[in-house]
Amino acid sequence: MNIFKAMKPDTVVDSVKSIDIQDLRSRGINTLLLDFDNTLGPDHATEPTDFSMECVEVFRKQGFKLCLVSNAKTGRSSRIAQMLDIPCITYAHKPNPSGVRRALQEMRAVNEEAAMIGDQIFTDVIAGRLAGCYTIMVERYSKKEIWYVALKRPFEKIVRFFGRF
Image (tube, rainbow, N blue to C red; front, side, top):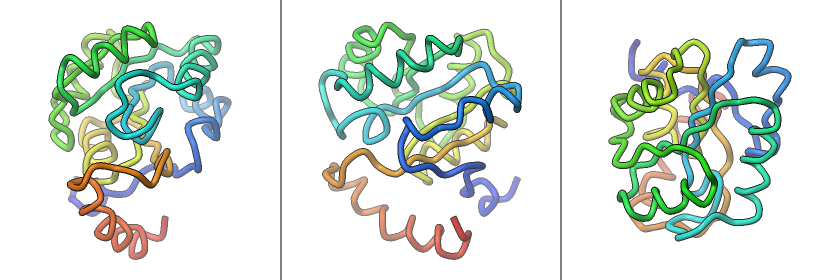
């Protein structure tokens, strides 16, 4: 897969709550790999929000297998995942697909039946695409984010403009 194809998500939605569960089912997706920072909650949060708890509960009730896949440090990500009562892959090294593959292995899932959900093209989307998963890009949870993520946003706008998404 070339890098330009790897940067284009399969679907773009406003929020995790806007994900079409029936569409996922029709695609045979039964496993959701979730980024946390600015996808399910605020960037660098130390605990889940009501929003993140609600999203996880909706997916769980629909029978999806869930796993947090985060580039964040072990302690913070693991605590959040524990509070959400889902497994977690930390130091996922996204955009490298190795963390996504570890999550698939942990969940005993295959890439064709999994979706990677996140807010960043250069981490979540690329990692998910390179791992062969369906990818869902969500608009960021909050405009407040750490400086090194904020630096990438103008480049994402360029990619989105030329990729028309």
